Image (cartoon, rainbow, N blue to C red; front, top):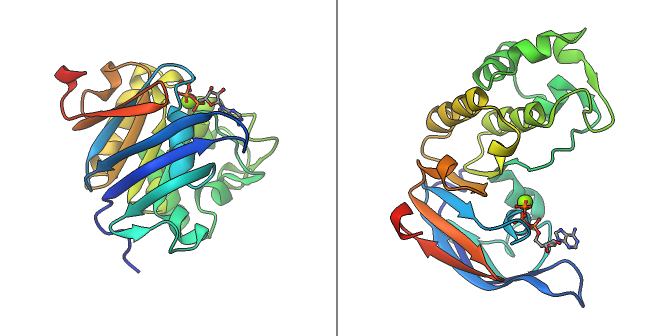
Amino acid sequence: DCWPNQGHMEVQGLTVKYTEAGRSVLSDISFSVEGGQSVGLLGRTGSGKSTLLSALLRLASTDGEISIDGVSWSSVSLHTWRKAFGVVPQRVFILTGTFRMNLDPHGRYSDEELWRVAEEVGLKSVIEQFPDKLDFQLEDGGNVLSNGHKQLLCLARSILSKARILLLDEPSAYLDPITLQVLRKTLKHAFSGCTVILSEHRVEPLLECQSFLMIEGSSMKSYDSIQKL
Ligand code: ATP
Ligand code: MG
């Protein structure tokens, strides 16, 4: 069970709509992402960055073909497909349950491992402030946490699940500069060799990406260097 191995993604003729009769937010877009590359995803507010990330996870209604390492999304179960991804959404909704359960839904890791990863993403001191620590029960979408902390929780979960492909939706909007440094370091260490798609409004947080996708209108352009943007 080693799929995906490279994390090479091919997208062909992807069209995404929210309703049958509605307009296409993305229309007939094609691009590919090399395995292990970091890709910056740019576009104005409302251009469809979050929509694209949802479509990659098969959360939106789509036409077109997506494959990862040659395996089509139509040939595997939804569960198998989504397991390939780690996701840090723009607005995080935390499931009702403990920190432990949110970090490790399948109960596969020791406390030691959970604390190590919590520390890596800068959440250790946050979790320690709650009574019961890892066993503290989060409710109402995790409202006791800031959105930035919820994003870090998603990042920690993605490290633990050993996702090959990481989708990050505008982390810089909610994270302060020091936390962004932590994120950058985590991407380098825990996700080295992984495919990363990082959505942002501005170019500055994308300086370490190797290629770029820009959404304009309902179409997409690819760039292989930041100078060409
Ligand atoms: P931002 O930079 O503000 O996060 P974005 O590039 O992520 O914007 P999307 O959230 O993908 O943009 O939205 C793209 C378009 O799709 C917008 O016109 C938006 O109104 C529409 N849209 C997004 N979510 C839905 C939804 N659940 N139902 C209907 N339309 C939606
Ligand atoms: Mg968005």
